[in-house]
Image (cartoon, rainbow, N blue to C red; front, side):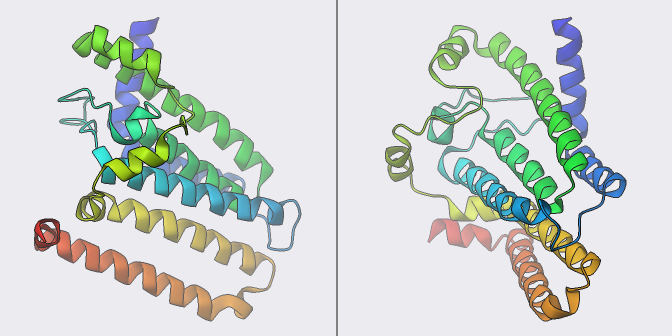
Length: 242
């Protein structure tokens, strides 16, 4: 049974980049956002935005402090070394936890209770299967070293003790964050913006905020374009060396 779950997790890891946003779109089509002004939708909105900020911040801290090369190789789970520093000293799966917070945040912004309920159950199971597959791989490769790491560091909920010291210990790699994360930052900004516009439209209040929403969309898109230009032209390397 464990081998079957591991293979399923490996497959989900393979398709995760396209699969997750597709599932979010399907959920929102099945259970559209509630209009602005609807309760408890309005109560979920700030909580959702907070989770999105926390999720993206966690991903950026993970990449900027001591990033683990565990993004896969040829779309398969892969790790060169057992990285236990940076945010990985406080939680074993900070990137997946960040992804969970981002997905949950988008669902909460929509305000639809069915989308929140179904999506929460789905994404918890989805990332748990991927983590199970990764854990099998890491245990087989790093053996006792990985078991000792698991015994000391929680799987999900970050251990906040010593977190400030960890952040101070490292030189934050802003160019690395821009290179690896600019696409995710853009998506995690534009999706809630689009959802808010949708909710305002449903509540017949879009005209009141249209200029602000367009300004924010232009800002996020311009930032994405600049980051992409810096990466593609390799000018980001000059920022790292300066």
